Image (cartoon, rainbow, N blue to C red; front, side):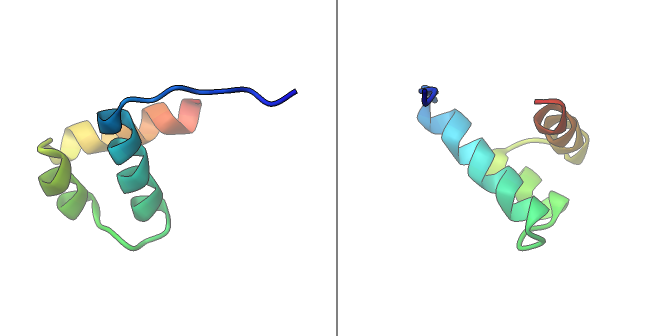
Length: 52
């Protein structure tokens, strides 16, 4: 049975940016600028997505 996940636009954008980092199409610095976060915050975001 498929599971439905609801995400806000902000969460969806973050997920897309994380995927681009993982695909090596975007650097952490570029992602930080896009998301309005520091590099440290982006690294923590990546760790959080890795845990899930």
